[in-house]
Structure formats: C-alpha cells, structure tokens
Image (tube, rainbow, N blue to C red; front, side):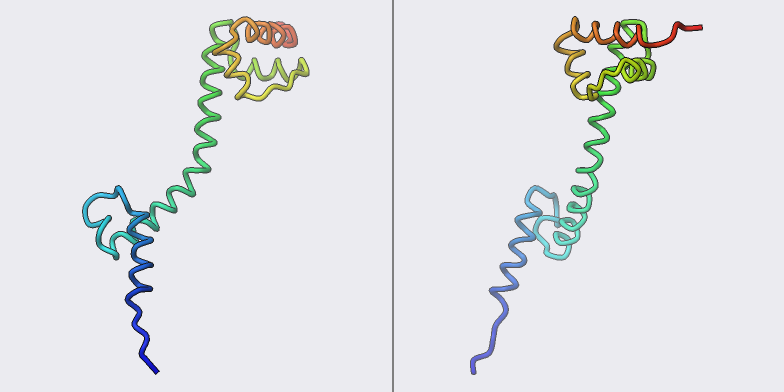
Length: 121
C-alpha cells in the first residue's frame, strides 16, 4: 500500500487561513502561525462587534432625538415619556429619521408628547 502524503491537505488548510488574513500587515498575513492567531482573534472581534454595532446605532438614534427634541423645548427622556403616555408607539429609528427628513411631522409628535405630559411644576 502506498504511503499517504499530507502536503495537499495541509496546503489547503493553510490557504484558507491565508485568504482570511488577506489585508493584514507584516508576518500576520504570510506566516501560518501568526496568521492563524490573527484570524482567530479577528473572528472574535467580528462576533463581538456585530452585537456592539446594534448598541452603537441605537445610541446614535437617541443622540439625534435628544438634539432635535431640545430645539423644541423638551428633553429626550421627557419626550419618550410623553409619547408613551400619549399612546404613540414609534421606535427610535423611525423617530430619528422623522427628525431629519420630516421636521414638520416630528414637531407634531413633539407637541402631542408635550400635551400628554403633566404641566411642569
């Protein structure tokens, strides 16, 4: 029986790692030991940051809303409280888009939220 040479398999495995390390700098792109460690770490970062992106985008919507609402005489938390009390259910993404693209419609929502809040004491 002929002996099995494993060079083809090893080369294929290494090629997969090198392809994933494309764009890395220095030895991290062309030395298998460094490339494998760098690719493994990059996958961990990618997994973590897919979760973090959602947090960051939501925080951006909230910042935009706070800035837009303060121009109309409310704070973000009072605005959200007013919308809840008025029974208006619109998510922050849509509110943020409204504040940017449809200022008149957004102002109407702010007025509804203001009217639903008790008078400031």
